[in-house]
Amino acid sequence: MGSKKLKAVAVKGNMEIPLADAAKAGELRKQYLHELRGPVNLFRKYGTPGTLTVSSTSGNTPTKNWSGTSVIDFPEYELLGGKKVLEQQEGKYACYQCPVGCGGRMKEGTGKYKYEAGAHKPEYETLAMFGNGCLNGDLESIIKVNDICNRFGLDTISTGATIAMTIECFERGLITKADTDGIEMTWGNHETIVTMTGKLARREGFGALLADGTKMVAERIGKGSDEYAMNIQGQEAPAHDPKYGVDWAICYRLDPTPARHTQGGEGYPPGLMPEYDPDSPHNRGELHKIGSDFSHVMNSSGECAFAYVTLPHVDAFIGFINAVTGWEATLDELLVTGERVANIRQAFNIREGLNPLNFKVPGRMVGKPPQMEGPLAGIIVDEETLDRDYLTAMDWDLETAKPSKRKLLELGLESAAEQLYS
Image (tube, helix red, strand yellow):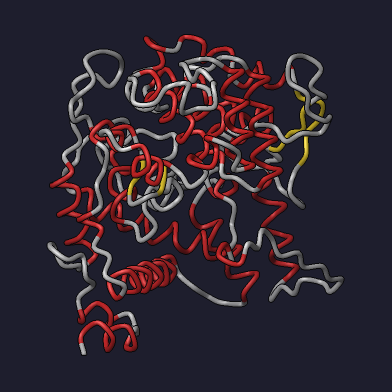
């Protein structure tokens, strides 16, 4: 769609959505509405901005284009947390019949930055990328760039990462005001962050150089700037640090769509995972495979991650799936479905000549070199062990990441097996 400059497809209808067993779905809804757990109350009150403070203090939130740590380099993160965002919020909104209702709309911008009342509340990722990532503690400026990105159809993760890279390149002297249309791109300068985001959105002046993301920025600037381009295979990484949660290190490179935080690194409902040491890189392959398979089922079903992480047990998810579809699927059967999705996606990439083991992961993401201070000081992600264990668990080749013919046939993917092994 992008190549055709298509921004959206709108579909409108008036037919009732069919459910295999509407009564059962309603019964389950009534039951589980009273049993939701985990972050449900936090999300209901603050939305995802409610996670910024704890994420910043734990080291999970990348800071200063992934080169720093919030508790040392950006104590202003407290100016961007859930309570501060809530002060600027005029009202809440929720998706249809959502039991969480994390959405919010902001008051009119009446200070330095003008935006209409009802502008969308910035999510955690937006606050982290334009805030911590750029050392920008001005909340109104982040609401403004969020509104710009929404109006132009820009991803705030990629845009924030591109602005942070631009700042670092400017600070290191790789670009100057002669390049940036006279704009002084320095850490924490919220005025220039807003200005440059607008120029990027409009492909105006220096913004045109930035508009295709960090990979292309590095190619255009040169001078070793690729060291500051925080992407994997061209996709900017989200605001979750693999040094904090090693599962990010697996899915950021080995999932068929790299640098995603929704492909097996999120929290899960009880009953899905066996007990394990969250800090150990060993024997994570089988565990991550379970999480990845489940995430593929969840994503394919249209289930919202904020709904399933609040469910009291994985059986609740299975119950809803079966009530809606009329299936009598077990957890094991659903996980096989997820495994099938994972393998067909991987087979497509292999057919197209993509080997994720060749994808470069920026050293800052995995502690190479390790941070010298802060909550993640000294941590180096054991990529080799994580990659090997996951590929082994998936039955993908340890050098090419190609799914085995045996695995493809076992999953009923005969066409993929024929294409990869003919």
